[in-house]
Length: 215
Image 1 (cartoon, rainbow, N blue to C red):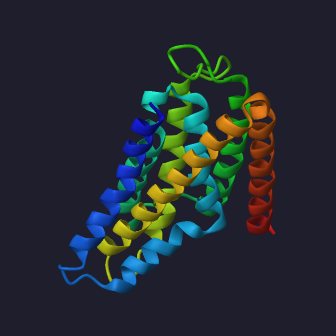
Image 2: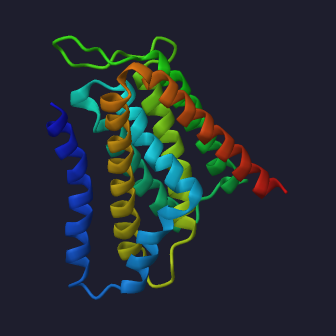
Image 3: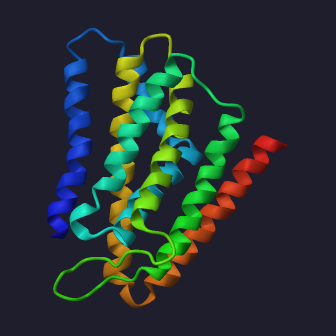
């Protein structure tokens, strides 16, 4: 079961790589591709995208773990296109930093969803916040990150840039899934402490990022 959903999530990264290969034959600027590949490594984007993978493993049933990363990438791509066309929101960067705090809170809540070690192998749903609500919050956060990506589209073109940031986003999601699986495997008895610590760290990082923008 684990191998199955890992293959599904890894496929997101592979699709990005295949798209990169296609772009190499269309004359799009390599510069825009490289800008896209590096843009998600901004501290706020990186933390949020890794958190999506961790949350998905910690909350969603094993056969649905791919839904968190896939939803984030879909909304990210659509909102980035809108951002490229000029759509924006007031204090967008501030809201992006607040999304890191949001993901920290989601991981703190995920402590109440321990792994079901029965035959089903499923992860129990959050009692305080249904998984569907969490997915909705992921979509909302992805829209903010997408608008921020789109607003910084290079003059050399959107296509290569989009391929780049989607490929990197997929890899960051896979990294988050790996962290979540490691917590489940190696810290099974203390997973609530590990998730709580990660959530608190994300919250602190988000507050710091917000403070830097507000200063």
